Amino acid sequence: MSTIEPLLERFRRRDRTALARLLTLIARGEQREAIRAALPRDPGPSRVVAVTGNGGVGKSTLVGQLIGVVRGRGRTVAVLACDPESPLTGGALLGDRARMPGHPEDPGVFIRSVTAPEGHEGIADDIDLMIRSLKAFPFDVVLVETAGAGQGDTAVRDLVDVLVLLVQPEAGDELQWQKAGLLEVADVVVVHKADLPGAERTESEVRDLLNLPGCRPVPVLRASSGRGWGLDELWGVVESLPTRRPEERHDRRALLRLVQQQLADRFGQMSIAVAPVLERWSRREVDDREAADEVLKALIEGRTER
Amino acid sequence: MTLQPQPVRIILAKVGLDGHDRGIRVVARGLRDAGFHVIYAGLWQTPEAVVRAVADEDADWLGLSLLSGSHMTQVPRVLELLLRTDLGHVGVIVGGIIPPGDVPKLLELGVVRVFGPGTPLGEISDFLREQPRRVHD
Image 1: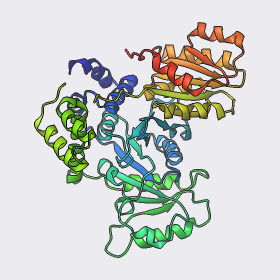
Image 2 (image 1 turned 60 degrees about the vertical axis):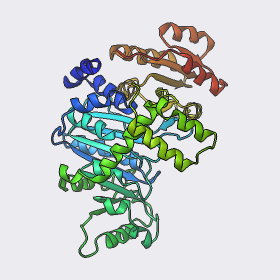
Image 3 (image 1 turned 45 degrees about the horizontal axis):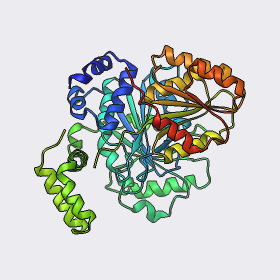
Image 4 (image 1 turned 30 degrees about the horizontal axis):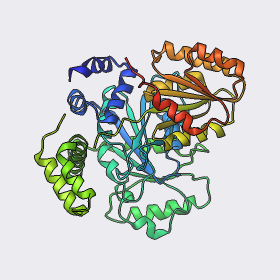
């Protein structure tokens, strides 16, 4: 624990390279508990906003534009841009940064690319710790860009104050907007690329179906990053929404994710404890489900080797 | 079973007025498939923007591609800024059209290696893997 104290000290003095290094440690899962303990639980009034949507809908471009809007209002901003990590090689091509105009002279802008493993709903592991670090640094606004998200990738909602969902014109028929999942949990829906034909129709379809009588009202608006349309209006809406209270985030799914992560960590650390099961499994003496049960038992009962 | 080795982070960027990005995008893809975390920073970057990206991303390596003939201006500027920003531990590799006479000059300035056109992708990833881990602090 003492090994990261000098780093934390530099971080508290607002040393930017210490922040960058801290995010690396978090991404690698190193010193997790020490970092978790060192960061304030509720680091202040920063607003955390996620931007999500399908791959190609324009998340990076919009976030790049929002950086300018937020800075124009005199507030500092940090971006966590998630892109997928290959399940085959562990490699990743993180291309979001290339779509965001750089602000090399402005200390009020910080952009970090992080990888989202397969099956983790488009966000990096321990992204809650990364967000807490950025809030504590502090940045006034933290923008989280998810990897291209599918209809069911809703985990990001629990981590942020406002969830902005991007859809694009001609993205589906009316039934598409009725499905459960991302559309249900969005706080704001943006019909992006609104300079393309069909944007108005898509906007009215989404608005009609999300704002049925008795439903939680969800603002729906059109924007085009390419043309610079609707960006100020979008940020105005985002800032006008109430910040989600911490107790609302105190939910079972977040706890489940933590349990899953701890199991995954133990699986990596407890090679000796699980080796006999894996061995029998690789000889096909037990099937997948039996092996999984035994691994689970070993992980719960065993001790970590480190 | 052991823990996965921690992926190496490399930023790839083009500095200056040089729109030829086919090569660097092929390298980006090749390194991705070799298990690297590649942060593609894109075209028309200034040395200042590249160094800021290296700092914020806490990258281990920086790969610069230049096909415009401006390498003897841009690369020294990037190296100097890296040193001045306390990022001397970051390894810099260069690719693109670099006349043979300029290669020793770049190496002398602190570039770790220059990869010319036609370099097999495996040669770059093997080279990076064989290098000792870049140490911060």
